[in-house]
Length: 136
Image (cartoon, rainbow, N blue to C red; front, top):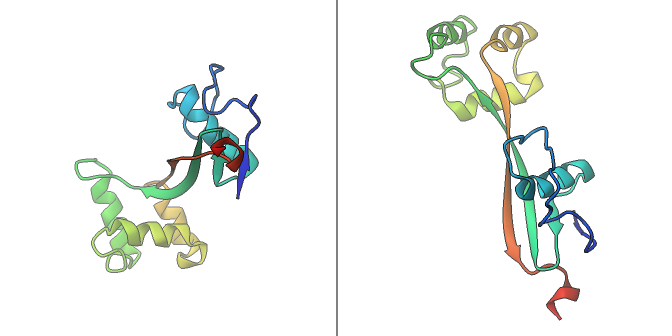
């Protein structure tokens, strides 16, 4: 779904600070389309000359090599019988298991949640061409 913003809308050149809780480090210009799309449930936001396609990806982070919790985390996976299912910590498989509620028992989920942190990544692809009205 996409929507055409009116000329007065704060996208894409807003000088007003825009706080986006999922991306607090973005500049106001970059945060505006993310915040607007998130608030409105949109996948695309169009201005007069460009259109931004917004995509959210959900990920799972776990202790990396060198982190003192990594060994305990790997041992927990082995004790839960998940080591083979995650292919020696296959990130994509672990992400899939974590994000599919029925894939893990409540006990497994409870024991793993101390190691895993869900992350969200937003991606935007900017395309030339806003609305057909602006193309003349």
